[in-house]
Amino acid sequence: MTKRKRNLYILEAVMLVIAVIWFIPIYYLIVTTLKNPQEATANPLGLPIHLEIGNYIKAWTNMQFPRAFANTLFITATAVVIIVVFGAMAGYALARTKTKMGNRMFLFFLAGLIVPFQMNIVSLYKIVKSLHLMNTPFAVILVNVAINTPQAVFLF
Image 1 (tube, rainbow, N blue to C red):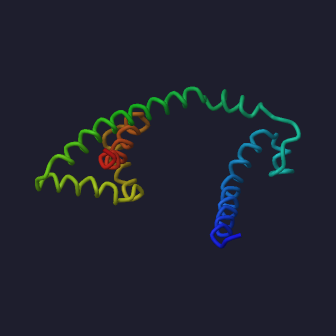
Image 2 (cartoon, one colour):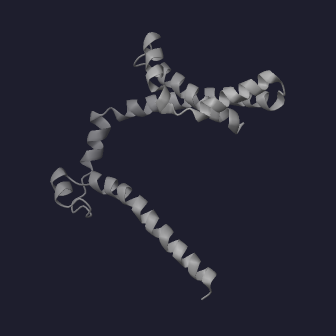
Image 3 (cartoon, rainbow, N blue to C red):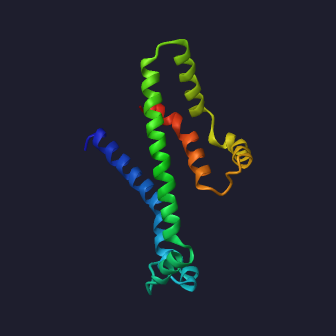
């Protein structure tokens, strides 16, 4: 066995260990949802003895899952369409404009990528509250568009 082949096997083994470590929380999540509470606390990582599908039925009915899914679909689809349209237009304009104003706009969108989202949370909250948009889908769409448009500009 050559040194290169041995290093490749070692790399594959390390990647396999990392993949298993990443998979453990997903496995735990799925297995726990298929158990009743007593079985989940008694044997957290073990396979379920009796499959408990009632947890999914409870989540579907009690949590109003269809309505939440429809709201999420509406908000995401609307935000993505707006982001793609404005990102494509702004990206095209930035690519074709070779003026001082174009360079300033480039830096403006670049700043939107550099500034972390967490830094803007308080100001976004105050803006949404002052516009009386609290607890509305429009506020979520507006914030999503504002946060993700700079990235879309650079993708186009």
